[in-house]
Length: 205
Image (cartoon, rainbow, N blue to C red):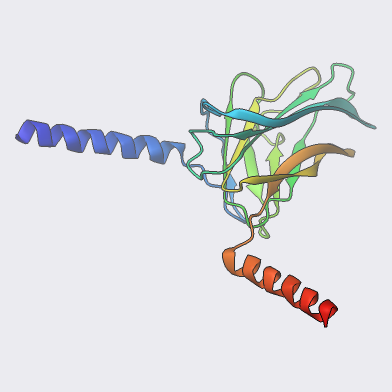
């Protein structure tokens, strides 16, 4: 009996350790180092795009995908993945990759697979912007001819929207991509419905 109880405790401890190791929550105003995770798992691609971009000092490609049903997403919403490619003919490396709009959305960050890993990912204090940084003495630089690892953002949002990403060095370019769309809180949705109903009543009267 003692042995069985001990095994249960060890099992629970190992589960907690795994969950804790996977937690890389990106809160407003925070900066974290990315960890490697094999994800998204068992997910279905909702939408994907491949967009070529050109700036004065670099050019490349961004692949963006929205995933549903990611069993590794403990937040329960959509998972967003991004992969950057810097062309071999680019004069300069790529320093930063910035995403909007993540305002009001719970977000976990990680990466998967081969490629250059940003040294840090930063969320601004307002919480609406997330930046992957490829510059600094201890960080990977997205050099000419290089590609990033798969950059993963798991969210609690069940909706997505078209958005723009910023790819930045000494110059910058905006690239079409996808971002989560905050789900209105029940109270906010109820107020919006009441407002719409009041307009209908006024028009009828």
